[in-house]
Length: 244
Image 1 (cartoon, rainbow, N blue to C red):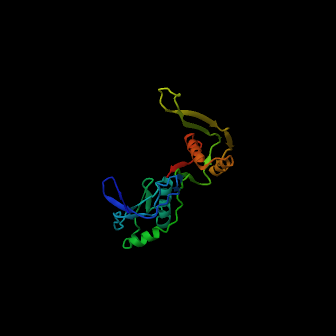
Image 2 (cartoon, rainbow, N blue to C red; image 1 turned 120 degrees about the horizontal axis):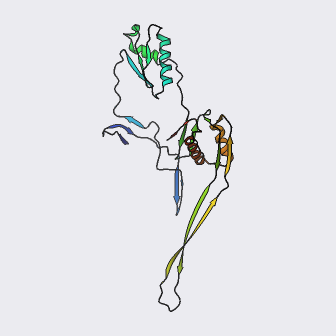
Image 3 (tube, rainbow, N blue to C red; image 1 turned 45 degrees about the vertical axis):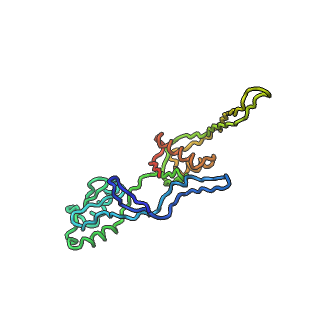
C-alpha cells in the first residue's frame, strides 16, 4: 500500500492493487528480453480515499459543477433543467460559466431536496465531446474517435538509422622488442536510410483512414504517434492529443 500525498504533505488516498503495465521482461543465462516499459504502470481503481470531500446538505440555490468544463455542455444542462421545471418568467437554472450551473430549487421541493436531486440526476443531457486522440507511448497504444478529421495534407515517412560498432583488437609488439601489448579499438560507422514512403489524404479524411493508410505502408504504432503529433503541430489534425 502506497500513500498518495498532496502538496501540503497530507495523505489523501492509499494506492493498492494489481499494476497493469502492458509490458514484460524475461531473461536467464545471459539473455534478456524486455517489451515496452515494465517499470511504469497503472492501478485501475486502486485509490482508497482517506480524506473524502465535504458533502454539505443541499440547499437552494446550489451549483452543479461540470466534470469536464465546456460552455456547450453547461448551456445544455441549464436548458434541460428549465425545460423540466422552469418557465419563461421563472428561470430555474442558468450557466454561470463553462464549469458551473446555478440551480434554484422549485418551491414544491423545499422540504424534499433529496427527491429533487434524485429527479435532477435522471435528466438526459447530451454532452459536447471534444475530439481527442489518446496516446500511450509506453505501450504504443492509440485510441481515437472515428470522426476525427484531418485537413488535406501529404505525409512522407522514411527511416534513418545510424549504427556504430566498436571492435577491440590486440596489437602485439615484435619479437625481442621493448614494446607492450596494446588493445586497439576499431570503430566503424554505418548509415542506412530507407526510401521515403508517402500518402496523400483527401479533403475530410478521418484519422481512421490515416491510420489504415499508414499501416498499409508498414508504419508501426510508434511511427503513427510521431506522425499524429507532427500533424497537430502543423495544424492539420482537428483534435487534441492527450498523452497518458
